[in-house]
Length: 159
Image 1 (tube, rainbow, N blue to C red):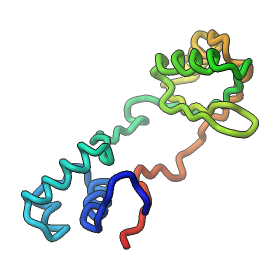
Image 2 (cartoon, rainbow, N blue to C red; image 1 turned 60 degrees about the horizontal axis):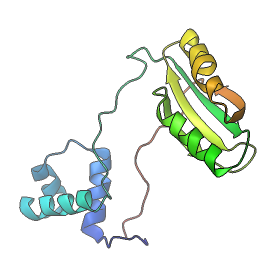
Image 3 (cartoon, rainbow, N blue to C red; image 1 turned 90 degrees about the vertical axis):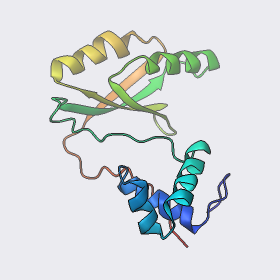
Image 4 (cartoon, one colour; image 1 turned 180 degrees about the vertical axis):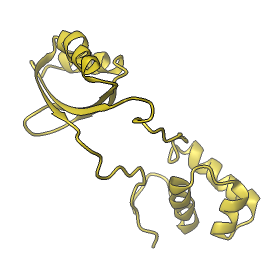
């Protein structure tokens, strides 16, 4: 595994465990990897300060929050000029219903994952927010029917 930060097998074990059990105590983590608590905590702090561990988050059930509509939207920009791209990216950042935005190759330029509570909210997102972004040339929406897999665990091997 080639990385900018040198990781040993213990660091990789820590990462694997924390991805699956983010709320594990330092004592429990130290027992699972076979180190005492102080060096375990030191390693976790090193992984955090190096940016490998970016944060810890609660996994929230969107259905129980009433967020029933999820969709992917492919976006093609009107123009492929630097100023249009920069402006589009800035405008996308200010729309909270957009959870993820990826610049892609292929038939579209960007791929958005959006979430809203209902169809009127979705219509408002399209009509009042996305359609107002003049850099967008075309949009194609794909409604999400069901979630088949949603893993947040990055797969890597421990040699």
